[in-house]
Image (cartoon, rainbow, N blue to C red; front, top):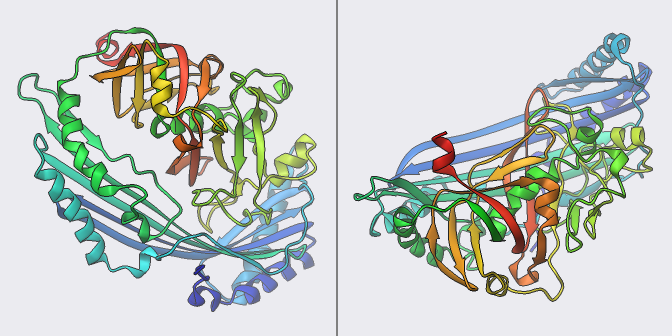
Length: 502
């Protein structure tokens, strides 16, 4: 049965506060005004060696008023939920716009958007994680940890669970009113060990991605928690004893558990239009994928089809309407290897000549102004594409890359290197044991241009992160990236141990 928005959130004076704020903004001459009330609950649990190490449970409730007055943004926020305070905050937002007008070099206008009157959306989940007692959650993580601690070669185990329930009410001066609720979970379990002979210390973690789901995710047979946990000790021991990689050029088969992060950094951020236009440069800069290249830039090979998507089931960036009242949607960013689209909010859409936004405005709390944020940016599988095993079978000398770890990318989202959780040598189409100290290095267009094949739908996995950073003051946003396994030819491989010694 679909979930409903919590009644105690609906019982807050949502309409009363919005009406007071929007009416006052109109009286003061605002060309546009929007009101956003949010309640965000966060619970974080962390265990070390099956014992609770930390527990945090917090709630943040407040509202914000954003206006355009005399072509200039104004913004103010508060946590006092009274009509009088809502009107006062609207006054303050208008005053901010008046003060800022003298510094504004570009008139702010928004792309048109249909009105959505009193619509609601709830993310798909079965069990609200905040309806489950903390003791039950701690015991689940502790039981998993005890299993791993009993495994050969495991010295320590860390386990964490991050949970968020986000509720938003939005209303604007044009008549749109939306109410939404979504939950998300990020479980993580990592085993640590050392090899007495070499003195190496390393770790191995489950590859369970964060999801827009409820508590059922931690018992869902779809991820096969029992099997995934059972294999970690053996994988860790093999990693500790694995030979170091010989630097050079290799063919790569990259698993979705690693490729999602490369998509995020080299495509997701690079195709945010505010970065491409130079409006945004925080957290690793602007973008090489500038608007003059739209429709002509060969981003990758012809099997590369990248979409922006705010609708995919269980996606961390999936919503009903964004923080500017724009309906969720899906669109092409790279088609047949060519750059064909960007991620937009209403202001950037209008400034670049687009008729409409594609719904990429988001604020991580009521105290922050919405900024253009990433959709679920994903690589499409081939309709009848190969399995991961079939991709591996097509490689004579290569490496299979699994799981994400560290990464680095330049200020134009162009030169990068990525490591991973574990790596397997491929010899004559077969896996031939783990390798260590591997990083792949390339430019964005060279890497995606070397993609020879993508796997079929059976290899497609939705990965992602809770904590994508952007803007100043800094904001974090959840985002997912779906992708299949993929085959890349002739990629440069570094030995990280040798590189660190230089």
